[in-house]
Image (cartoon, rainbow, N blue to C red):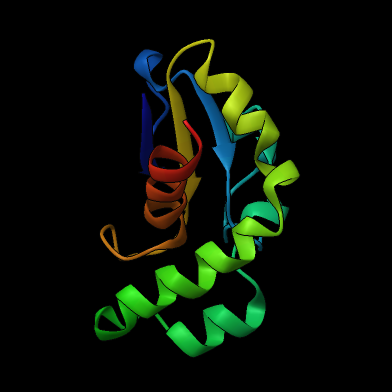
Length: 116
């Protein structure tokens, strides 16, 4: 099972393997406080897609289309997440305020629909 969680929420036993999937380090967070397996910057959307999207829910569908096209060319970057799903729960960590329209939600959907 893959789930998402803001980096500012405490880790829980049910989180399983945790990956930070943002391109930039979250403000105010210390590496040791995240209790994560790895920071996977290469699975985050490009800067140009992020700037275009600007967390505008009206652009959500097109954001996913653009992001998924990028992910199609970076399948190797997903390897750690895919392997971890075979061992148990996986939590994708993100720092965005919007809990419904962010790259971790889109990445989870991509993996569930196209990979796993």
